[in-house]
Image (cartoon, rainbow, N blue to C red; front, side, top):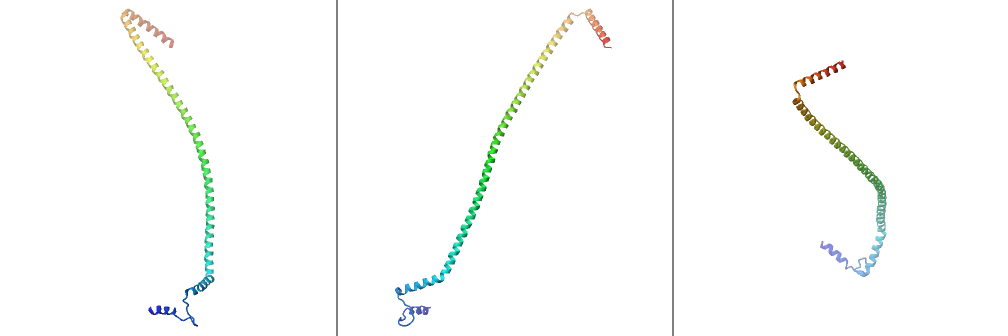
Length: 184
């Protein structure tokens, strides 16, 4: 390895008179070398650089085209969504209006049925009161009749004697006989 390094170092010490060699003067050789290297790079690298730039340009154009297509699809989807939103809003308004009218109708129906029920209950109450009044009147009549009957029986038993008793029985038998003759 030392031999290779020594051989490169010895190249720098070649005499420049009349022979081919390396010029180690940096200020004199750099602009020339740089212009040659840049010229070679431009000549050979121009195609590669043009291809790279064209590829990059195509990728950018494809990205722009894809972005435009995606934007167009997004705009279409947005329009469809807006149409759906308008339709849903319209349906919601319809449901709201119908719901309010249905609620009002149900409220009226409930009020009507409640008033009918109250009226029926009032009628049942009045009928029950009349029935109870009639029952109370009948009970009072029955008691009055029983007391009158007991009083009459007491009076009859105390004032009846055998003779009067036999006359009443005979008169009743006579009436039953006449009734029987009329019905035959």
